[in-house]
Image 1 (spheres, chains in turn blue, red):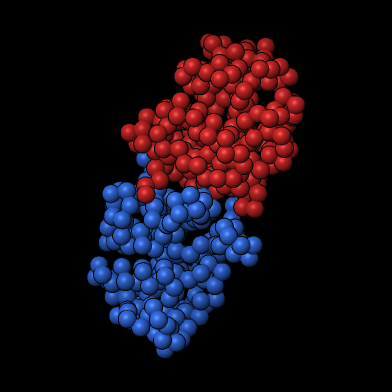
Image 2 (tube, rainbow over the protein chains, first blue to last red; image 1 turned 90 degrees about the vertical axis):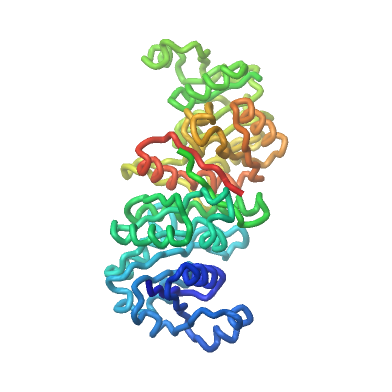
Length: 213
Length: 213
């Protein structure tokens, strides 16, 4: 599948490489491709880069891997028309770093970042997924728990959730839980404060949860 | 240990019975013991009941198993003096049912119910624990995941956290994670929205998470 990953940070790079490795045709969107390519961490990467304005061309699926606070602006630069009718996997988290570490959330409880994005792009099929674990585990579920941990999808369109569950399967996930409509993104995003405390207790992000039932 | 469980609902009854079964001396606190005993679900129970005013006598440890919205009032009825210097395991959740199911939280993100209780009872050692799973799993961790799932403790006093971890071990828990100070209760309480969506997806509460690392 032709996948446009929006965001050039650790999550965008790691997920872009992971998706390319399992056979997807990946392009990573950025404001200024030349400037991104000049960054140390991008010089040795074979991933294609495209400007926000061109990255959507031909893309069948989009991934929002930007910083949560910058997501709306980045996706607006990609364009409502380019995103119309497409599935958007929203990996972002609503982290508010203004009061130091650990961050709090800038939206939660009665709303979520994913729902905000869905309202901003009503013709796009937003699916919250992958935001519950670190990038290195997203693309390599075998890295923790013997490969038997859980990842989640939530979104208003059942076919879009199935598409994203398929992408997770491509990446090696064997336990993909479908949580239904996009209001479930509140729970997936509100997991972050506990994830952050686990990060602190375990002194690193290489962990994930298994829903045992 | 002499343990006073505050709250006569499913959580209080189940945890009270579970703690008694592993050898603790349990009394369950209620506003009106005669009225509680007259309830169908209490008539056949061998657990002792005591009024809020007397339940603290001799108790070494307290458990707040009341509805989150009623916790402050119930603990005030037990009394600040009775709770002073003691460990209080806070199992409650900050569920706001006013807008239907699933409930939202009435405190979250930059504060937690456990921290509110700690501020109200500054001489008490509040430890958030057990709120992340259903009562039947709290007292019987073997019921899910082959007994290998995770439970958490958070509180400002390290000895109190160790005491509560010991109570968890008494109940059969083998993976008790110490998350540090009571601000971690924000994460443990903000887990609830995802727990509720898992409850919906799995059509029941018999599940728990394992932190695989």
